[in-house]
Amino acid sequence: MRRCNQCNNAYASEVTHCPIDGAALVELSRVASGAGQPAAVNTGSAPTLAHTPPGAVSEALVQGTRVGEYEIVGRIGEGGMGVVYAGVHPVIGKRVAIKVLAGALSRDAWVTQRFVQEARAVNRIGHHGIVDIFAFGQLADGRQYFVMELLEGRSLKQRLTEPPPLSFAEAASIVDQVCDALTAAHAEKIVHRDLKPDNVFLVEGRSQRVAKLLDFGIAKLLDREEAPAQTRSGMPVGTPLYMSPEQCLGKNVDWRTDVYSLGVMMFEMFAGRLPFLGTSYIESVNLHLYGQPPEPAGVPPALARLILQCLEKRAVDRPQTAGEVRQRLAEVGAALDSGGRRAQLGHVSPRSARPTSWARLLPAALAFGVVAGGAALLLRPDTPVVAPAPVPLELVVTTRPPGADVLLDGARQMAPTPARYRVPRAASVLVRAELAGHVPKEQRVAIGAGADKIEVALALA
Figure 1 (tube, rainbow, N blue to C red):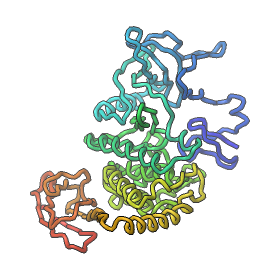
Figure 2: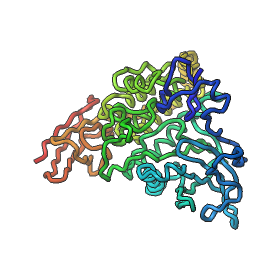
Figure 3: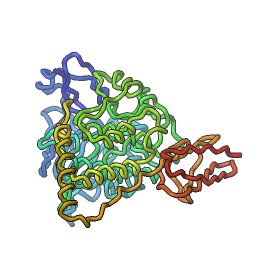
């Protein structure tokens, strides 16, 4: 067996590189001896104290070290970029987490730029579903750090491997909150680019579980000129198991790359397995580029269609915004509720290829709904029948040249052309396209009663 020292996942001996982050795997015999092994992350409430072997040169911050306005309490965890410490304000007692960039990386202009960008991106978004960063500075030895809110809980990745398995309601709640945070980020023209269960943190609140989006270190600011999303080694930034096809190719991306990664996460959460799992970095990338995902086993059809649409190879064929994914997931939940089936759905089997218990329970739930519904009608013939909500219309807008902003009945849409939009069924909708250097074009589109999809092509002068 081999293990990755970055993500701690174990693989068969024939796998040489981690398909998640591309790092070289280490034989477990070497890991057991401590060769190259990173410090463990303490997810409990008590941080560990830094310890340095005799004769070693350490960058560790010992308990009581002053970092800005805060004092170090202990170490929470360590990763490839540096160390995260627990801290406390000595006067008011505010508890924080302090992320300190490794010394060698602090002398690297490219890395420090990403480190600063993470703090800027988070503060620009300012959303409760994104971890808050509220101080930034530099230690006496030149290492950079920032101070963020201290979260107590566990990552979604940890949750997926622990019993009990995710229920439909739990998974849907997490996805809903992630979509809300992504919508806020995208509204500020910020693309996360590394959406995965590791970067979703679950905090147990007083009344409900709160999902927080972490790590905007490789986020892209769409309103700034930037070279294609490449690292200096020529490899696309991101995590291979969750990267979109355009991200795998190192192309410029927009928020629809996050929709793809969200689709991978949803497949994993609802179907209990990943859609693509290569044995190497290259194989994982090729699967995203050319492979067809399997049907999510045991998932209700409407949800399966949503997940697979998120995984479309072309960005224009996916749901165009995280808000659309959120709305359609809510519609799936409402449909299950109306049929009395949500509570009947079983749990997701974590990281398993076998169908979940939904496949066994759904027929029984459907039968129960018919019988119970019939009994209700017999007992209460005056019970009103609630008509299902009308299915929104799919509107496909293309322009020549592409890249135009679209307004539908005066409401500006997030995705530029070519793009798909979901609009409520009405007699007509006014489509307006705007592009710098061109005369805006408007067209009122009539919506037929039986239409499911309408395509509009506008030529801008």
